[in-house]
Length: 443
Ligand code: GDP
Image (cartoon, rainbow, N blue to C red; front, side, top):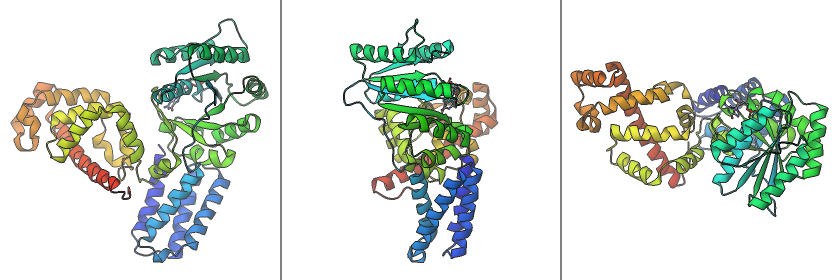
């Protein structure tokens, strides 16, 4: 996510950090680089101009040299402004005073509207809502089928009217059905088009007037950069959106849409799609996103994810083991399977402060297939070997393990290295957690 932008900004600030004190020309040079990085990230040029002007004003207005660490100070200002650019704080969806809350999902074909409807139902169900998905994309029978399949996977009901081609009628009937069945959240997947056109807008305006949803969410594809921002502007001018869902952030190395859409439309990004799986939708937190971009990591999202997915008792056990340095290869295997539940490892590691630059993490990447080998290797070890591999394992034992697991000594060594790195990382993690508890800074 935003890898290119993050790398450039982090390089810029690394140079600043290296200096004991900052002159005005150091700051000017750094801001020039920030400006270029943002333009290259496809951020709207006017947004960039205002952004840099604001930072300049704050930096120059501050008695920079008086602060203990001027570079850190500049980074903090950039962080704050980046966060403000994306809306400052998390915006939630509007809930109806009297249920059900009706959410209308709009957007162009391919942006991820149908998938996001299902993901949103899944996410809000975890927060205690009882969702009903509504298939109102009347032009594409495949879209109705798609929503039914997704609903089926999630065990969330999907409302359809087979004989109706009128989205308004479908929406109304769905809301009635929700009342009858005690569902308090109605998510309507509307029809899109290949591009913004009058027919689509007229249809959505009509539906908005007839159904009066509590929330209109526009789904846009982050990977299309400024084009997505233009789409948002067009929809917003006709529909008065409540918020935006930015999909495919997992594949967005630049970040232009994420950084411009709020400033251009005035509408907040409420959720971000970060993968194809049905749990890959996150509430959008501008401050945390700014931290990720600047390589400060995103411990809060990581901790929340961990709390959602980890077995609490197991976590406590694991922490104890790590603290007492009794973390063994068995635990490592356990942990890999747990971490896998959180999502792609690379994404997870990007949230850890200091590990944002994922380049150096090649050795730590684990894919599904690899996990099978890891498992085979660990299962080919004796209990002693698993407990203290550093002490016990020699060349001939490694050969035996490689044979037993159908791998090579090289692969055994690689696993041991991963294990070692993980232990180190866990320790770092613990230290960081301690600092967090003390109310210290995250970076
Ligand atoms: P619609 O035409 O707007 O309803 O789009 P779909 O919901 O059918 O999604 C189009 C494609 O985008 C599908 O292959 C989805 O799996 C994919 N997609 C949607 N959201 C995300 C996301 O956040 N990340 C990734 N990687 N893919 C996504």
